[in-house]
Length: 195
Image 1: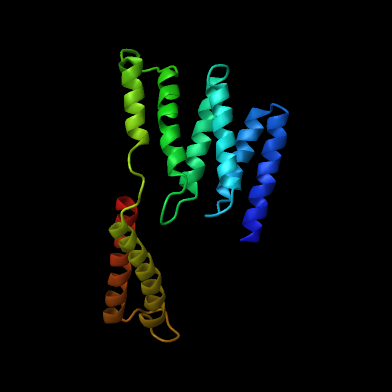
Image 2: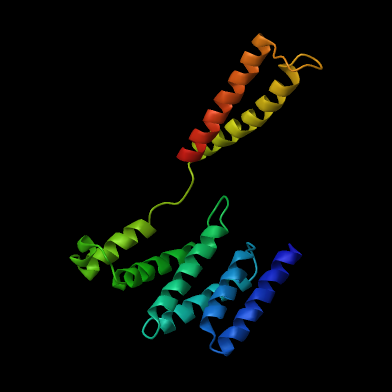
């Protein structure tokens, strides 16, 4: 825990130095890294998020691509630190409309995008950003069971399906443990696709 805190502090200080030199790209990178060293308590993460927000807002008129990068860094850093909950929900919900707006202003190359209004493009981008990003708990459990069953089944197949000291497979045991391996592997793949 101490290493996480000190690493976050180090990244924050590096970002502050870059910000003081108006090296905004480097500052964005290190503020994002400070957030990635997330701890549920302590003020470094919130201070880094506030600085990222300030950089993004100040660059919206003069450097839109970098402003968009800063908003995306803020959003993705909190999503990258999630586990049972997603920290920084307030920052994510504040950043989503900004990202959608800046994305809508980017040059689009498809004919369908060129014919849409700025408001339509913003609305579509926001709908994508606001989609729930939580894994399905049921399929996550299926995935873990499938993986563990596949590994265990493979090891048991190796130990139990072969005759001692030989390379011949005992048919009944081989079929039983081989079926477990195949079934578990299928559950693992389906779980990854659905989770």
